[in-house]
Length: 255
Image 1 (tube, rainbow, N blue to C red):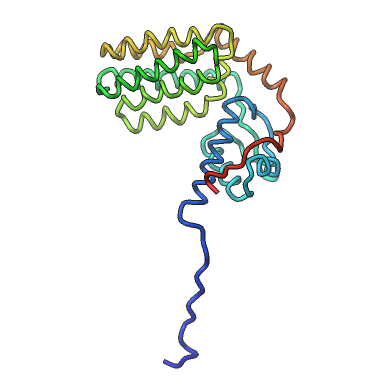
Image 2: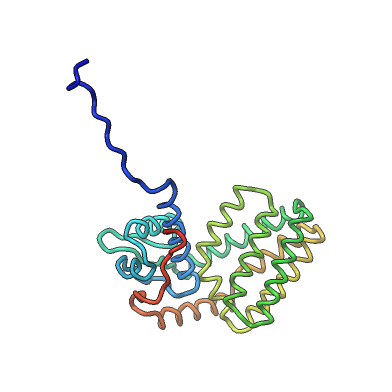
């Protein structure tokens, strides 16, 4: 073979290690998702890419990937040539979502009561005590996060992977609204009192009681639904038109 027919070997490119870009996008997605859950980015808010990139100290590439991930979860809507907005839902749709969430939680509770191990019971009690501490401290934001740990412990103890996937997906979609519930007067104390009843049923292995108590714990209806809508209306009225571009630490841990 002549030298001119020898194929050229392309020069090696200095690429980022595998997974680094995905890790950065995932961390950014979680940061934006938490801002949405905590009401910093309320439903219907426009998410400006330039301001978000500056706020979190990242480039547009991982930011767009994070927004795509959030859109696939139904948390953000991507509109052609108009950018991203935090997903909003109608009252009827919200009621339907909570109805389904209550049934998914009930099923998780039913299975967990029959299947949870001693170690999983211990984790449930630890999560329950963490909720108690946040409740006694009258800290709704801390209670919100401790409450998520409590429910995750029940999901894991159900030992049904597909059910857990569906419960996690809808739970994440409802995070902003579940947090708003805890802002209603006396709701945090009522939530913890309901936790006490749920834990008792799970530790006793009473599947029917665990399912029924979790269903009622999650289901939003009547006055509770009216309180949620009122809180949501106040959040929208108080929300800024755009997210602030400053004051947010960069995601240095995944750079």
